[in-house]
Structures are given as C-alpha cells and as structure tokens.
Image (cartoon, rainbow, N blue to C red):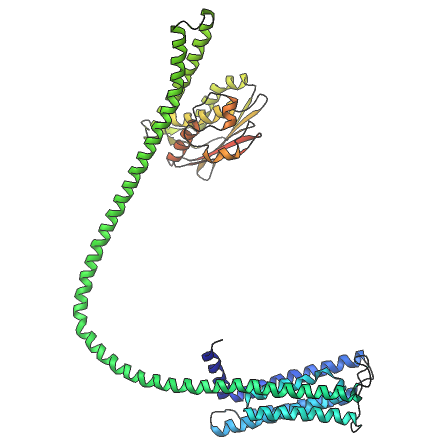
Length: 506
C-alpha cells in the first residue's frame, strides 16, 4: 500500500473515532463470547480445576462495562466532529483499553496466573493504544500492562493472591520459580515498550505525512483557482477559434473521405496483385509438376521403341516391350484425362448445370465398378436413403466425384476387404461416405493427401497405376459446389471419405 493511501486511511480513522469506538465494542463482544466458550470447554475437559463461576463473573463484568460504553457512545457521543467530542472520544478509548487490561489481568489470575499463555493479549491492547492514541499514551499503557502482570505474578509468588493451577497443561510450581517469572515479566515489558515505540513512531510519521499532504492540498486548491481563471481565458480564446475549427473539420472530413477511397483502391490493388502473384506461382509449380509427370513415361516409351527399332530386342521379346510401352502410354492418357478434368473444374466449366439425382449417378458408377470389385475380390455395398433431394450441379462432375472415390477405395483394398458407400440427406445437405478396409493413409501423408500429383508411399508400393490428381479433383468439385470434404484414416485398417453438398432450393 502506498504512503498516500495509508495516510488517507489513518486520517479517516481519526475523523471517525466514534466509529472506531463501536468497532472496539464489537471486538469486545467477540472476546466475551470467546471467553465463555473457553470456560465451558475447560469445565468439560478439566472439571474442578478452574473457578468457573469466578471466571464467568469476570466475563460478566467485561460484558457489563462494554454495555455501558456502548450506551454512552449511542446516546451521548453520536459524532466526533468538534474538538470537544474528539477529546471525549479519546478519553473513552483510553478508558476502554485500561478496563480491558484490568479485565485481562483478572482473567489471567483466575486461569493460572503466570502459567497462562494468554498473557500476550496485553500486547494486543498496547498495539491498539499505539495506533489510536499518542506516543505518550502508548508508553503509558505499555507500563500499565507491565505493572499489572508483574503485580499478578508477584502476588502469587509471595502468596498475597491465591494461585489456580492449570492441571494437565503445565507442571505445578512454575509460579514459584523466580527466574521463570522475571523472564516472563521482562519479556512482556520489553516487547510492550518496543511495540509501543515501533507502532507510535509509524503513526507519528503518518501524521506528519498527513499534515504535509494537507498543506500540499491547500497549494493545489490555490493553483486550482488560478487554473480556473486561465480556463476562462482559454474558453474565450476557444470561442474565437470555433468558427475556424468548424471549417477545418469540414476540410478534414473531405480529406478523410478521399483518403479512405484511396486506401480502399490500394487494398483492392494489393489484393489483386497478391492473387496474380499466387496464380503465377501456382501456374509455374503446376507446369513443373506436369512436365515432370509427362516426361518420364514419354522417355520410357521412346526408350522401348528405340530398342526395337535399333534391333537390340529379339523378335520373341518385342511384344512384351510393346505391351510395356502401351501401358505407359495408357498411363499418360489417364494423366491427360485427369489434367483436362482438373482444368475444367478450375475454370468452373459447368456448361450443363441441371438438377441431378445423386443416387442415380451413384448407381451408374457402381454398375461400372462391380466387375472390377469382383475381380479384386472386394465386396461392394451401397446404402441409399429413399426420396433424396436433387442437386443443382454438373452431372459429369458429380460422376467424376463418385468415380474417383470409389475407384481409389477398390484399388487400395486388398482381396477379402469391403467397400461401403452410404448416401443420406441431413440439414439441407446430402451426406455421403465412401469407406474401405484397405491399406489406409500414413499419418505423415495425411496433410498432403489432397495435393496435386501426390501419392502416399504405401499406395505407390501397392500399384504404379494412379496420377495423384483424383483427390485434388474431388476437393475442387466439392468446394466449388459449396460443400466440404474430409477423411478419417487408420494405417492398415482403412479410410473413410465424407463429403457434404448443399441440396437444390428448386
């Protein structure tokens, strides 16, 4: 807490001393309750050891004078605004603390005297006096607490006061040990005076700080009056400048509008430039990929034909070499077909957009692949919900979507596996799944599976057939139709591709 905050709190504490009296009264009621509770517990745990009724009488006296102080505060000291009221409140606080010290001494005498460890409560009262009153009062109450405790221990030591031993808490005879008693009295006395010095010094420092802050506040008020005069002059000057400011505001608004227009055009140009750069980069990368994919098979075909033409291949082996060349040529035709399909999708070539019954397209594709699935010893099942809504789409692209997904599922599923297709309507969309029990997609390949010309290593090792464009085509078709496509795959267990397409509103 900062010094200014502490000083403010202390000033409020002095100005509302009456409220602090109420606070001390409340604390004393808590002390009465705690004392009665301790008496009750002691009577139950150590019956016959302590003078219960005398202790209760002491607690009653504490409650009685606390009630008197509360009544005086309520009916005769309602405020502490004037100097006389502050003086009376100060004397009332002194009386409270003095009576509390006498009551603590009485309770200590009835509950073990020097054997009782609660003699440290004197320090609480010294601390309150140091915080609420002057430094002289603090030293006076430190001396009073020391004299009361010294008198109590001396009275019991010389037999002037009866001693009530705390059986079971401490060994008997400690109240007759002069060294022990002197140490306790000296410890309490030194601690009380040190506490009084420490707390009262801090309080004095805070009071000095309070006076300095008050002086500073007075200076600030004087300066505030000067500032008010200057402010009046500034207001007059401001009134003279108001007309010019309005004109400048209008000009600034026009400039701001013009600047916003320029910024909007600049953002559009920047975005267009970025798109052009991205398109150019994509075109360059695509050209390199296509060149790479076309060059190797063509070079292989040229090598096969050159071997035959130059007579390096025996007649009986020429057919096998030509079959290899034909296979590579067919791969090139498949790659070219996929490139044309990808190009048409990217250019949004939807020359024949119409209402499409997706389940009819699916049945056509399934009829075409049943023979391939049977040859591969893979079961092919489809579950289609009835009365499905139609899509507004290009039928060829919908067919290409089904063809690529089902073809991959059959191709990468070993013999004895299963391919299951489902199609249903949900939330204004058609939801389709193509699930297989095939080789799955390795984890490191999954982030790249929709990339162009990308094939996972396990797919390459299973079959050389494949251009790596099928899934890229599927993604382009689904996203351009306003849908989304995703997959889940576990290596060695299978893959499930899921896509959602919005149904037609017609």
